[in-house]
Image 1 (cartoon, rainbow, N blue to C red):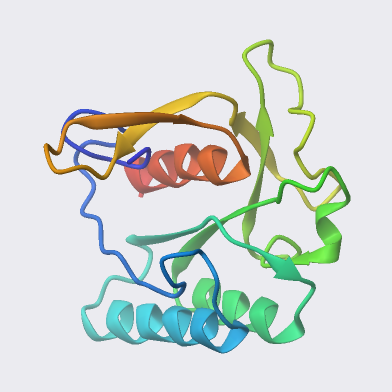
Image 2 (cartoon, rainbow, N blue to C red; image 1 turned 30 degrees about the vertical axis):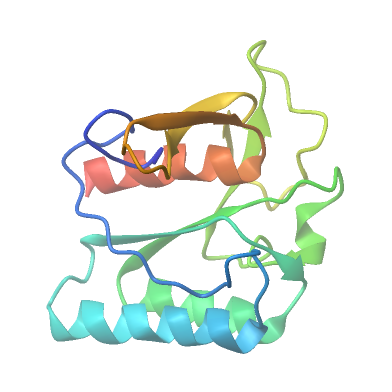
Length: 167
């Protein structure tokens, strides 16, 4: 992946823990996302990893107080939360978890350091990172496949990997 890995990634020393909150098609419920965030908080607390954990969420939906409150609970519990701004070319304040004030909200830039045409924007966006034609590891039977992808979902792991490096 882009956060970390043996061949690709911003932070190759990071310990990754996948928390599945969406199905294979990328669909899910707000409840499943909140359940995933609560699972992280419970485990970070139980393991004493406050201020040593980063959550990266490359997902989004309409603005949700429940999602934003779950993000606030994570950050209050010592978890850095990095989220995608979204790919609708609109104000990120209209979606969650991008609109969560305590999250680090990430938009996408292209190779020319310009905001990507699809990236959400607005005052809630904290930082922009590479999000166009990002080469990343890709699941395959040989474990060495890559794919070039675009979106704020590709920009977000850059920032999450960097955040994990510095904590």
